[in-house]
Image 1 (cartoon, rainbow, N blue to C red):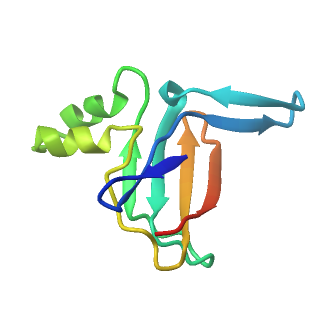
Image 2: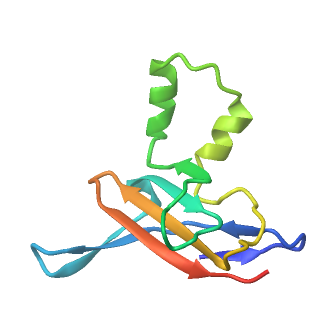
Length: 118
């Protein structure tokens, strides 16, 4: 899931997504190439998911096409920080929990809550 850094901040690394397929009764594993986006609530309160970090992934950088289509003037370094499977560093949560939501290109959505300590 993630790790603590020397400066005390936390980071999350996304490795993939496992989704139960009810038509086959099996677990389908997706790589990060098959994930559309993922979000982190870095201070999850168990009542609502608040997107504090948003990232976009996928093979062939599909969101680069969106950026071009919108003729977006976006700083390349800022865009690169959004197109990542590793989060930007963040402080330990006051709630002791973070939540990670992952959505693949099929629209499957998974939310996982992690307990973390400072």
